[in-house]
Image (cartoon, rainbow, N blue to C red):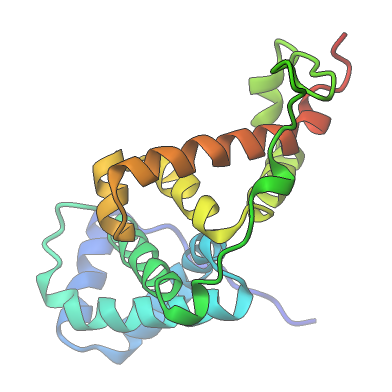
Length: 205
């Protein structure tokens, strides 16, 4: 039976040594970087892109990292630095013309009656909703719900609520106005709430 060997976590000294080897052009260090961080970078790229494009974004990110390694100063952890690079690589792919197909968010938004009330009965989420969001199975369901959002809305939600960028930085990354970020984020959160209702309102009166 084939065994899958996992690399031991790097200490601060081990990371510094790996970076030094990368800066010397050590090919084994490049291979280690890909093996050590490739999986987690792919997970990040999958938040923004479908599988094939996510894999391409990770390749783009490693190429960018290899070219920029001499400028890595160690003030941030290597994983954090790579994380930023793969997010940027994913956003670059999203901004390509072929990726700009606008999907409607309307089917996912709540519906309202003429008097302004919700068309469907909305039950309050139980008090333990936040704890349930932290459970592994629920996190997977939330992940799937986020994936159902159209790309333009999903990307704003990820940058603001997952990457925790502010509105101005999100607008700069996406090449849109801060006002557009606010509108898209509000609508994305509304749609996500609708998608999560069946999960988190279970058992609520």
